[in-house]
Length: 489
Image 1 (cartoon, rainbow, N blue to C red):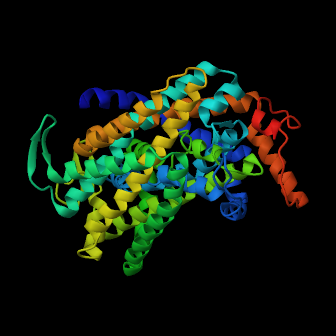
Image 2 (image 1 turned 90 degrees about the vertical axis):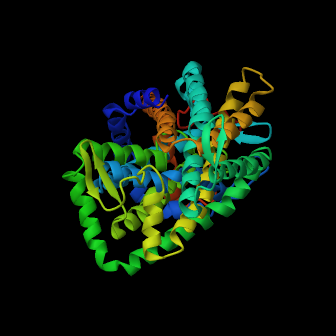
């Protein structure tokens, strides 16, 4: 099974997808005149504007729901993997894909707001909705919806659960092995998977509002706590920071692991972490109550910065400053600072890095942080998958579909907690790759057909220049068709 999954993953994550992620980000950056830089102050202002309604959540809640999906195992174990297999230069390419991807995030999230709907008293939207309305291609929308349900409901939860389980084993030991039908499993793996499944069931059976309420409390706290620990470690090793920056930049263009490995792993783990272009962020963006679609597009562009430039960078600097990493090439170790048996696809690099500076704290702290990172990410996956189930149920009434999704996601979470890291990550990469291919190609076609996200940005900037207090959005005046929610509003 591992060989088959690895083969499929190699096809999906080939050079064309890496080029597509970088190229689309650059394309939209130029078209929006680098909105991620020009409108940074406006992004910050919008974070705390707007209030929730009976149908929608606030801009800040939408940000935290999307961040709960972006900030996860990829920020800890994913960064370690990028360094371990792509070298320190992979971090630079993670920064590049985040900076360019912020413009892609603006486009996809603005589209989600433009074409959102109200279903059962809640706002729903995302790529499936805008593919149907903007492209006029319900078949393509169904393809994305089914791919997303499989990715977020079956393939991706296992990565988060696996990272959490490995972190707990590193921190507290494996415990006694228990023979099961899955083979010999440690008590820690079984316990971590069981606890996560029980907590997941409690929240996902409570609905979208409960997910948003949980995320807005947990996500800011866990991200700030993690960044604070990273800043302490950087401060205690301030003299090494210039050398680390020089190593990241230098290795990006003359990489020890090869240029293809540095760029490939940097982009792959960058997209996995910040999700720009993957099509996950738009689901939370559509649920927000805003005056103008561009406002939530800008907020979601900011979330990419928080994920990669803050949280991922925090992990990278901790690992590289302390030297707690190995770099593995095709012929063997290119750099070996740690024991050979340490898996680069686990959180071990990060745990060892913090433990080396803060003895007795590092391993349990990362396990604790990763529990919340992983748990909130799985909640976001459920919300995304449920939104696509709701899309399918618009034309195909299947009463048990939502319940089946919940059971599938909880089963995938437990399975991921007890399987090997290689299999879990490979399955997750397949899920990310399928969604990224479908979404990026789709939003590029939408641009060439009608340019709705660009027209919306121009309209918002024109109103902002006039100094209006209350923004409005008239899609028909802008030549944007099938934006029924805003037309009726």
